[in-house]
Every structure is written in structure tokens, then in C-alpha cells.
Image (cartoon, rainbow, N blue to C red; front, side, top):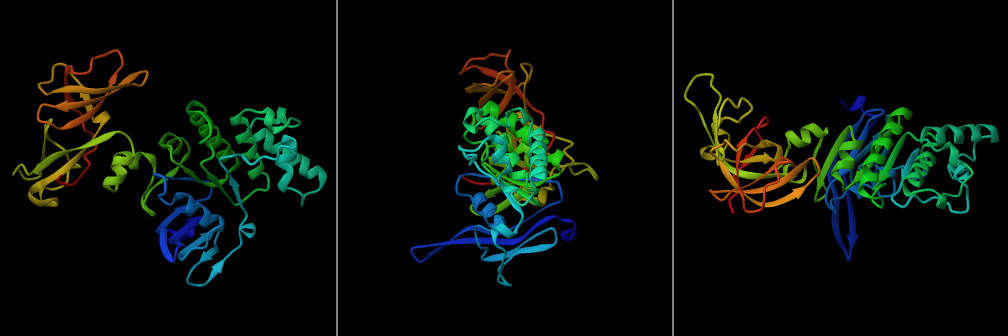
Length: 367
């Protein structure tokens, strides 16, 4: 419901004009966040996620659609409304921290609080540094802190003026992988403790899953799906989302009715028949029942007793498990997560069986 949304985008489009040619960076995007929710935009480079974030900030004008926040209209193309960025009460955190090197940590956090009296300003700075767990760094210079600490200081500075909405644009991309995931979880905890509504842009799926209540997958300027992580993974709305999120492949399949009243259809796959699939589409959902079945790596179980065999083409060590890329005798490729104590060699044939809890099918795509 629109009235329950704190941030609501309706059919927002952003276009850039270069050499007299208009190019759509964002096309008819609609999404919503409730008060205190964290949204994440994810997608390949050039998909429009940063342009959409800039439109919310007021740094880009929308050519179509409307942006509302807390009941107020920030942008409305049809009405010619474009509220200036400084009037939107929106905070921003950037990839490069943008801390002032000549100011102490405390003075960096206090930078946007000049409208407050000295004692109130000092109280707010202490509160924010306590929130991000860095009160002991107040008198230090920013360059004396680690990258993760600098990013938390940038977050404290953005939160200090109590913005209605916080926007974060690839805030962890310059950090190493382990630190990114840990800091993403810390930032989520900080935003939840402060009750801040936030919209976050990243290209990293682990960051998106660690931070977001809702995640939007973008492609070619369009929002393919706006959903929680579970449904993005198990119920992708489009073939692109299915391919972009997680590890998986498409296998040719055919849906057939059993002829028994009330019985679920049968799904014929290269791994054998899947029966009692109550989530399976009806046979007439696709021409002649032919479709492509999404098989995630966690849909395939290593089982030496299985009659279905597959040859290992690639293996990637992930600590507790291997990610095997396998080729069936019939030619189809699948992937499987296998416990790492099953250290099979490339070229070896192993037994596998399907364990598909969520049936995801799309129209057959012929080569």
C-alpha cells in the first residue's frame, strides 16, 4: 500500500542526452520501503542502480514518474517538481569515505551539525561514535584508522544530522572481501539500532544479502524484481534474476500430467523424473509442456549409490565444500555443492541425484 510506504518510487525514469541522443539509464522503476527498512539495489555495471540512487538524492532529475518520502513529493516529472538535494533531508555515504583529512574524527562527525549549540553538538558526536563503536578514536586523524573504521566514521557523520533517509553508494567496494562482509553486517546492525531507512547500492551479492530487507535486481535500467533474498533465490521472477543470483544452470525439461485426478504433474528432467511436485506448473503452461528447469547447485546431491553419473569438469574449493561443475552423459551441465572431504578429481565420474525443493521453470530457450 502506497500510504504505508516511507519511500515510494512510481514509474521513475532517468535519461541522459549525449550527442543529441537520449539514453535511458533508468526506465519505469517502481519500489517502496517502509520506515526503518533497508533496501539494496544490485546488478551488473551500467544497469542504472547508481543513477536511480542519484535521482532519489535529487542529483538527477527524473524524466518520468514520481518520488515520495514521508508523504512529501520530492520529484514529480509531470508536475515539474524537483526538490533540491539539500532540502530533502537525505544523507549519503560514498565509496571513498570523503572524510576531511585536516579534521579529527570527532570534527568530521560534527561537520553537519553547525546549527546545534556546542554542548548539543558534542553530545550528538559522542552518541554517533558510540553507535559505530569508535568513541575511542574521537581525537585521532582519519588517516590513522583502518579502511573499515574510516567507513564507519563516514556512516556516523552521515547519521549525525538525523537524515530521514540514508543512501549508500558502493560503500565497501575498496575493502577486502572478508572485511566487506563483516562490515556489511555491522552497518546493518547500526542502521537497525538507529531506526534509519536506507537505500544501498552494491554489485556484491553477499553484501546485498547481509544488509538488505528488500533487494532489487536491475538490468538495462529496469527493475527485474524487488523482493527479499529468499524469494530472489528460490522464486526468481525472470530468467535474468535466476542467472544473476546464486549458482545454477538451466536444464531442458518436460511437464506431463499423470492422468490421475488431483495428482501433481511429473517433471521429466535429464536427472530423472521429479514426482509429487505440487509447485510445478500445469502441463499446458508451456507449449507441449517443454520448459527449462532452473537447477541450483544446492538442488544436486552427491550420492555414489545414484544411477545418474556426471563427470567433474571444474572444481572450486570453498572451505567447507567444493563447487563442482559437472557434465551428464547426455551432455547437460549442472553444478553441485559437495562437502570438501569428498575431494574428487577433475575427469572423475560421480553419482548425483536431484533434491529440488523449489521448482522454477521458464519457457524453453532454444540455442
